[in-house]
Length: 93
Image (cartoon, rainbow, N blue to C red; front, side, top):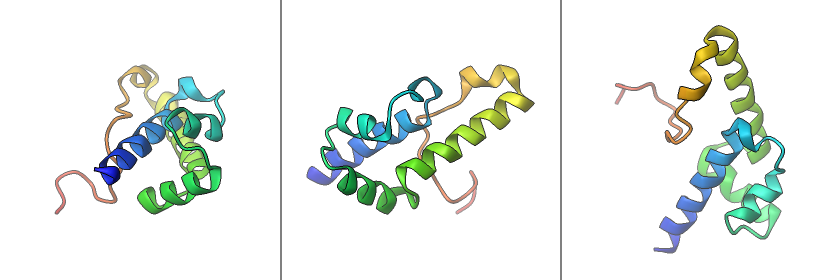
């Protein structure tokens, strides 16, 4: 049960880090919002779960969002920020 709760909180953090509306919040503020009181502990858990630090993830998400908006200006509202991260393309096994 504790693992499920931790994963859920990490997913909420990941969602907020990718959300352009949350850009003014610091990584630490987002982590604290979802119950992570230690920055170092949060960073280690996030990296273990997603393969990058929270700051790196935010930078990557920002770049992808900007590229999408440059190529497809109307797509910003339809980005699925709730989709889990996967190293595979859809349809691959």
